[in-house]
Image 1 (cartoon, rainbow, N blue to C red):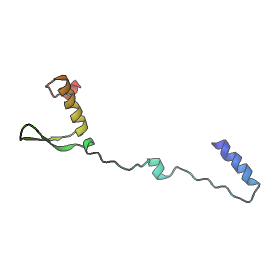
Image 2 (cartoon, rainbow, N blue to C red; image 1 turned 60 degrees about the horizontal axis):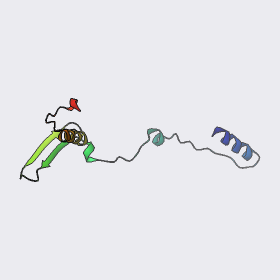
Image 3 (spheres, one colour; image 1 turned 90 degrees about the horizontal axis):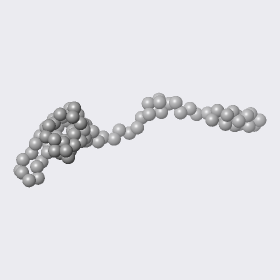
Image 4 (tube, rainbow, N blue to C red; image 1 turned 90 degrees about the vertical axis):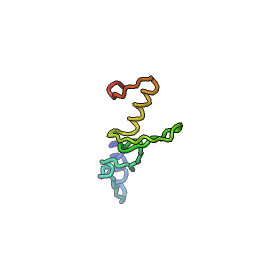
Length: 89
C-alpha cells in the first residue's frame, strides 16, 4: 500500500495537482462503533412462562441472559437430568 502511494505521488509531482490522503483513524473508526442491536434474549431480568396444558404461569428473575438460562434448561430436558446446577453443563 505504501509503495502504491509513493508511486502515485511521483506521478503527480510532475503536474500542478496536489495529492491529499485521507486517514481512517478517526475516533469512530478506532472505536469501531456499530449500531447496537437489542436482542431481548441476551439480557437478564424478569421472565414469565405460560403452561399450555395448565392455566398457570411461572414468573422468575435471572441474573444471566435468558438465552443461557434456556440453553441450560433445554440441556437438562434433553438428557432427563432434573438437577439445575450450572456447573454440570
